[in-house]
Length: 424
Image (cartoon, rainbow, N blue to C red; front, side, top):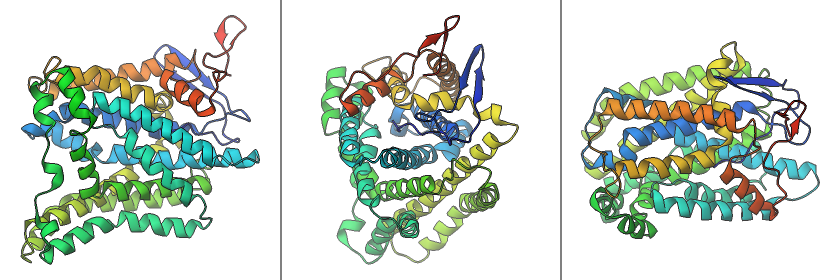
């Protein structure tokens, strides 16, 4: 789902081992990668998948049953994994534009076309799973073409901070407290015509509702809960981090990352334990349930951002340390993000939904966790094995071929010597 990111030219070759699969990643002049970004992307994808499994691909919310497993997964990963993918998207945009600029070309038009293709892929995926995020990232990505024209990193960081402050939620909160009818009504995202179909409808009925009616509450959720504004802020931050070489020069930013990690963890812990007291204090002001809901959502968005920063900085610290082996297996999965994201839905939506096995309320949280972890382990093994033979995942290859309108994009790796795949 997120474009590939290159490795800094000075980064040494790394040998990735996962089980019996060993892949050597060599830096090259024209197609080198930043493996640490692949790690972030792969971790984010697997975290998002784990959330989807615990929530039975949304059906959990029909009759939520809190428990230790669900509460822990949601606390650690819900909202954070998605945000980490958005951050990587902004960084990957910078990489594509920067590469083209170094070749003396403007990639803007082709990037717009690339996003249109991604939008089409997301549309097809949304027919399987209406919770698709590809369409949203692709549509919001067009704003990066405008942001790219702003050369001042300070202005972009300022805009990102403004987005992270939650302006749309603050407006909702103030409007609700002031008695505005539109702000005090029921949330538009609470009306969901698709859920009964997902529970007991046929596959054709699910397909029909996913064409439009089932998508409406999702987009209302993005609007009402400030997700669209937050995505833009993450895009801008990812682009600026690319500009300053934050991911490519890990040693140079070691001290800044350590300080930022400490701050992010303190903020995350403070918000986790302080949200409820803050909510109760806000409730005493008597502004009504809609204002309280907006306030709760606002503090939740800040918790998600602090969690996202904590995960990103922690993964980078591990990658740079002797414990790199703990996070490095996520890198191959990070290169097959689009293929895996769609395959996950194609396999597990029928497992949970009524038109398939209908197991959404039959599996315990422990069962869903076990199946999810087993599936994650398989995906990480499969990704490492796949990349010893192929350059891209199948959907990534189609996306790239359509981007350049050419079938000459290499798919298989060249074979050399004793038949071992050579790095192309």
